[in-house]
Image 1 (spheres, rainbow, N blue to C red):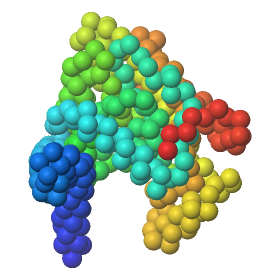
Image 2: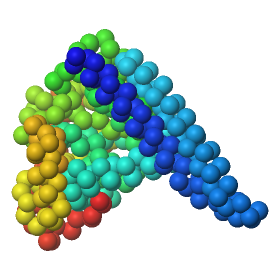
Image 3: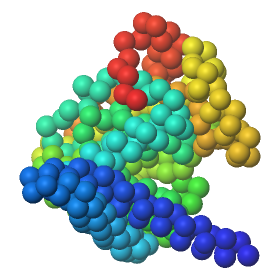
Image 4: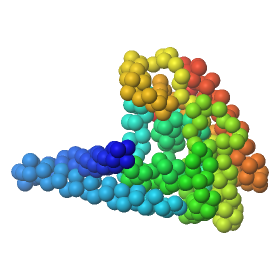
Length: 331
């Protein structure tokens, strides 16, 4: 019965995203169609044709991404690059999701994200909405590496459309060393495609609910992947961008709406760890050039971990003194 419920849920989720994509493109196209029809005195007809064409195009594009979402189940598969419009829509979706599920998201140090070269973005990982916070904290789009189990079912299409690709992990550790090596090589291939390619991944490889950055939770795959890129590109500019995400633990200085949303989600969901919070602070650190990292992958990721830990302390301090933290509001 559980498998049947899961199958029904996947079909329902897929249809919801198909309908959302159709509606999202139908509305502006209806306006354009009405404007075109006004010239010939056929406003209503133009609006209908515009909505029909736009809706069909949106649904077809989402179906296209679902095809690539199914292919994501093949470990190491990398979907095509989303269009500029789809990248903008993803950021817009993250903004809405964060507003509903988290509340305000405050960003410190967004200017640090700019680097003239390839960049691997590494945030800490403690909450199901980390992907939205990371996207709002970084002022440009980037491809995302995620756990294979998170890009299945109804989430496959949107994940592919957002530029994600999958890594086989369970509890932060690889479930298939050979497949993981394939992912490392393909991820390196993606970074090597362009001199200014940006890719994001969670170096812990799993959700750490208490947000304690333990050395043993940080995996070395990111550093091994960067080593391949560094050697194969002839030591072209390459860096790590450390990012810290901190969720506000109390209802201090938050709106009644946010209090209500937290109460509602507590009632609806037994597992509250990945459910709405009172807000979030994102601190973006300065890029760490790969050439400055130790050659040993374990020592290199430990250096990155310590840096993220310092940024997390900064996020906590800024959250405790929000009135003078100088945060830039992004939600």
